[in-house]
Image (cartoon, rainbow, N blue to C red):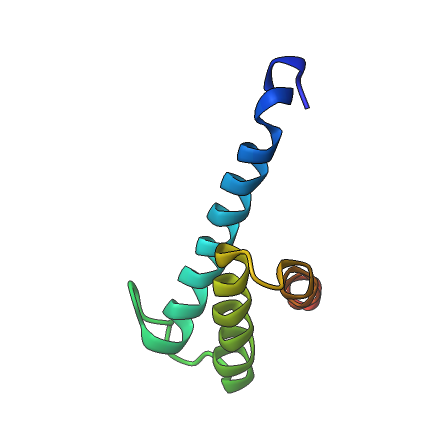
Length: 82
C-alpha cells in the first residue's frame, strides 16, 4: 500500500470488503430474484440456483463482516469454477 495510505489501511480494507460483498450480493439477487435485472432466458438451473445462492449468502456475509474468510473462500471457489 502506498505510504500516504498506511494510516487508513483498516478503513480501506473495510470499504473494499463492503463493496465486494455488495457486488456479490447484487449478482445473487439478480440470479435468484431478478432484482435489479432478470437473468437471461435459458440459463442452466445449476447456475441460477447453485451460483445464485452462493453469491447471495457469501456476498451478504462478506459485506456484513461475518465469517468473511469462509465466505470469501467459498465464493472464490465458485469464481474459479466459473
